[in-house]
Length: 144
Image 1 (cartoon, rainbow, N blue to C red):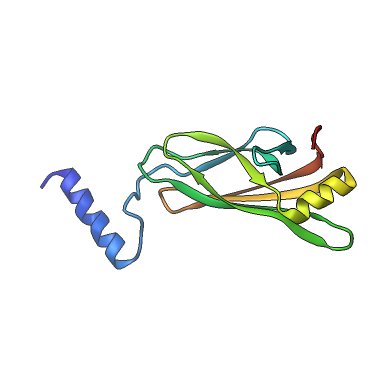
Image 2 (image 1 turned 90 degrees about the horizontal axis):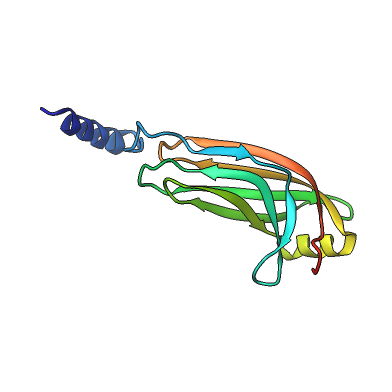
């Protein structure tokens, strides 16, 4: 019996019995800090935050998925200013950008700057979740 055939049989058994991903030998997804977060104007007339993080997905034929959220202090209590689902195609690295929700846009426009905390999680083809957090002050971009 060839080793490739044996590996596919074992992968099928594991996937069917315990729910393990069939790509169990794949490299994990990665999150790398590239700088500080900052606000930018997006193409739809709103505001977005470039998180200063780079998400990488190994070339295993499976899209890496994850989530990101931005929290910050509003007038009185901490609130979620944005949340998004992240998709990173196999074999590439991309910077993570999150569009601010209406509450986040209003606060940034009103105050001119916000102190934010960004939390990102990314699941690779191996099924393992990689998490990272960053934060800092974001300023309203010019022309917004």
